[in-house]
Length: 388
Image (tube, rainbow, N blue to C red; front, side, top):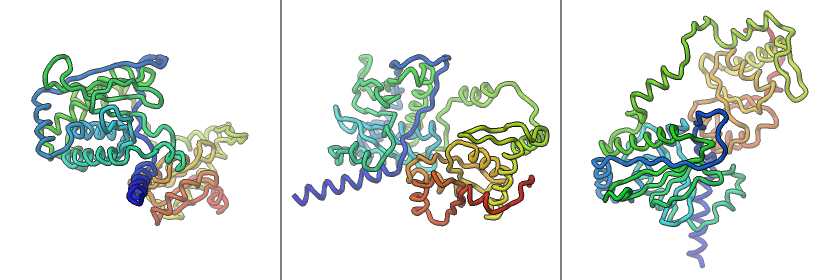
């Protein structure tokens, strides 16, 4: 009995850490057609080059890790790059026929592929050990956002569809197409989220990651891009549109020009409030001076934790006017995610409102040294309303 209870307590602690860190890894919405097609499922397959597949198997044998852990490591790195986050969360199938479980991996570009592979191996082992715990019930207790993940990974070749909250499912299929030893990556994706071209790009990123692991497992993940030279050129030049001469003013200075030209024109309407350009500018200036009074200088990071509205708009302008860097944080994010975002950005000051401080307060307790400033308090300090 005591052994069973200890095992349950250990599983609860494990899943509490996984879930309380907050947030799933979101896949970019890439559908070229306008309007996007209705819900459906598409399939895209790519074959890992034979030389790379053999090198990956040798790595698995040398390190004693599950073969699926190598692909899981590549998958986590792709998700991290796609989302711009240092961590990746995917639903991982830990054994043939098992249900997917939330799997969180640190996949930042500063670590080596080998260390990421070993972490992936340990993560799958933890899922196997704690897989019979009622994860969904604990998630509800913690108030974790649904769904827990929107990407699934299956190293055992199950041909499941992307259903429910899942938008993309990656399966590893051995010996496909009748070729003994071939390794095929099969992507099943929701067609209202991704189109075939986008699925092909994501499959290509996985191939690139696997080739980098096979080529040098001790290389640093972030030293080489997952994008081809052609895609880099397309992203940098092809999507940029025609070249335009930019004004010699910053965003808030362009806004101030409009204020001087039309001070009494309505600038923002929200929730029964209506502000002119002059009123919005004055409020932004007062907030900016409140930020300056608290030490915000050039490129100082200011977190803005507000619901989208008039005060949010004034706060963003205020950060620019004070010379700071605007760091948007959704008030509804879990405390762990807010804390991680503020810590990574080196943020020491947060602008917020009384209705948006619930999880923020919890996050600030774990950080320490980060000041919270309510918008209404800043307005009440009587700072001047003219331009800085």
